[in-house]
Image (cartoon, rainbow, N blue to C red):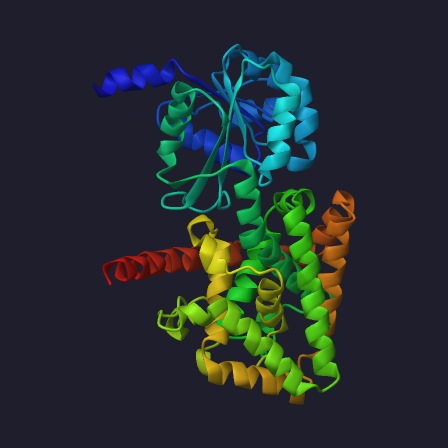
Length: 443
């Protein structure tokens, strides 16, 4: 029976156009499950890809997307959102009669419109989006499947192919996907990008400075470096092409600016009211739930090796602005937890760690008002948040890339360490999340 199943799989050809990090991850995983892969990237990468995959069973490399499109039964475009229209316009007309086509971009409404525009009408459209990066184990992670137009047979084939990831399948429309990914990813990315820009502007590595050590500082540092170790276009498409994401990033910059002004003006009562109101909106229904992050977990993941007792107070403007932004945008992040990325779950855990421990939040507010240790850092953070917002609002991919590549080069020497620690952190949090979800379901 197993041999018959493997033979059937080999008779189905999966095409992957775009062999970046995610494209390669998909190709290797699907090929390992017994499916035949036809893959390509830009023609100038053809020889390099042939050498890279020469010894990999079931992966066949071609010079361009026309060759892949005409012989593949399920074709996946794994290219940058910015380039998708150009690439599909070039290769879409060559799609095999009756084939299925999908994409991997993080913004699905524009993706679907591109497919409708350039693909023959006899082609089915089923897209997907793995809500994690290429270095994360996909098992148990959310994998969104979007059935835009497809027969039952075509849809079942896509499910069978993607089942090799052992991910948690989530079925959404393109519009639902874009709303949820904006709510769970857009501002999260903006926060980490802004922290990286601020640290670069101040010319210091945070793990070497005593005021950023221990606890949730480890989350900030490791995940900021994790984002900057990836390619800029992974985040640019979601931010620039998704209208909901644009609005939320603008609000995050506004929240950071307005809260920082209250700090500068010494308006402690107004700052306290605003922060507590936002905290009640976001976390009010979570009071009886256990915290996702605990000190004993957080302190394991330091790049500096400094113990927890060396931890310093912090104004935590990035976290205060996040919760204020969620309230202003009427977002309760727990509503979308089934579609959340590991990055988002850690960031949500960091915010609830601060907001659901009243004594910690009181210390944060007091420190922000009375101590200027972080004042220059918060100033640079506010500048950075506004700068990222401007790049997104202007729809300027080139400005986004340039803003990204500066901190990327600055932090590059520590990417290997951060990726290793970040992966350990994500595994630990995922295991803890499963235990907590099981406990809640048994209550």
